[in-house]
Image (cartoon, rainbow over all chains, first blue to last red; front, side, top):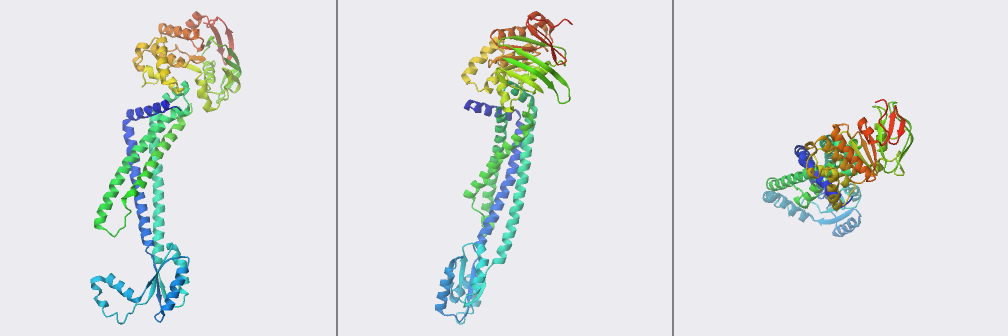
Length: 295
Length: 228
């Protein structure tokens, strides 16, 4: 198709939207609402993943050593732990350091720890970190076999539950999103079907004059695409506004909740909204045209 | 130019619309197709425009077999055939000018060619002063002239007119016939399906008469028929 033909298609598409202004507004509104809900799911899903990742990265293995262990044995263990392929980080924590740490945790109310320096009940140990959180489970049994190791502790049970919950949430969110996208496509298809139905006589006239199916189709596709694009841009604006407001207010009231930083995160989310909204518009108009082109 | 060989058309419901029809129309001819309702006249036009496929036989338009065109080839056949119908078939929301220029936009003619050609054709059909009017602001005869202008704007080989005067009073009808004759005089083959006995009798052109799906008469300088 030539450039002037494309210009003509756009002219036709916009003329049609002006003529059916109420239908146009209704379609844009439908896409916008759908995309806002979709956007909310994207925000939620991403933040859940983010939080899960946050907690996952904090999973550490604590190895406690037997009291009678010598410093040579400690050095040897440190070397052996480092040589394990799953282990990313080995940090020795003496019982004195452990006590200091405990003081830090308890802060002002740490008075009850006074005097423990003389007879420290804590044990020397190592803090280990694996490359990936799921490696914790495979490395723990190995650690337990080393001589001089008294105990191995890790937060695995909690992480497994967390994984299960986030996985389920993702499936539910995906299902809802698919449903919403289908509903929006259906509504746009119907909107365009009404315009197409009103113009089926015009379409048959076009075919008598020798217009190809694509010549007839393009203005409708551009119309659907524009409806989808405007609707999803409106939705993107709302999503950006909402998320920034949410981040601002949560930073004050719930500072421990680690929300994903708005930028460039929102760029990705709204990018998906615009892409999907536009695609819905195109698919909707293509579906509704198919029947009327057989003349 | 236009050839129908042993065409038989049986519709899905078993109605036999045409039986073994043979017709050859040369370039520049003016042919009337006459006959009572249900004789198969409309089926002939539908077959030529590839709206229907013949059950048997072969149709050749401008040296190309068209009875088994793929759907995407049909538009290119229709661009070689200008069509005019009893009910005008104009775009109601478009001006006279837009209706005519649409046919050129479909073939992606250059804008400059459209600007030159459309006024030319509107002058030919006598509607230069009404280029900006909408169809509903025009009389029936004027609307049919718009349809004629649209049909010939791309200079088709064949002009197919299906009862072009059917909705018009006698004086207006003659105005349309004058234009058809002009178009024919410029070399376009004209095929006109009609019931208008007075027109056929007065014009003394080739007349092909259909009855019950068969060609019963094919005369040069013919008349509508004896029974009337």
